[in-house]
Length: 212
Image 1 (spheres, rainbow, N blue to C red):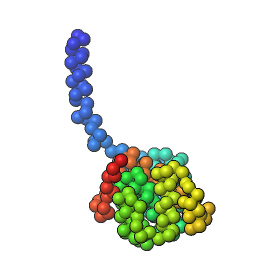
Image 2: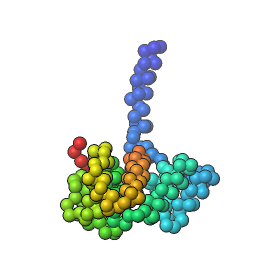
Image 3: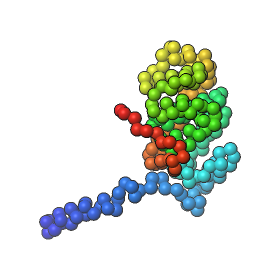
Image 4: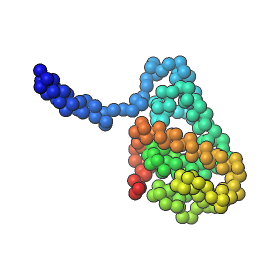
């Protein structure tokens, strides 16, 4: 009897992967409208309105909606960071691209690369960010932003010269705007990576893998 149970258990272990392959799992699968509870429905309706015009079934919203208490707080940050900071789009989108590169968040890069270029960021600067190197030909404010971001991501400290350069260009409020952008899009990147959200098409060149 024990031998028979052992054979059955072994056969079950062999069979399980056929039904539980990782590629068969859709993480944070899109919910249907009729599946939403009142809190989720209220938030879904809120993000569908201008200026966001977002669908709750798209990344990262289809993950955020799983926590309707957290979701509106996250999107309130989005409203400020996307449209109301002291930074022009060229710089705010540059900060988002730097964050996407740090996480190799392909969906985030796909979504924000066109916005950065539309905002006035030189495609060559964005291209160097994608390659993981300090861009050549940056404007003074772009260099100050890049150096502050990399001091935080790479060095985990901000030197006096890097801080002074950022302070001269952005002031204390602007520095906090940059930190806020990076911090929020860190959350977004982690969400997108967890839900395995890749770029939906190849209209934007994907981020290359970087050597560790």
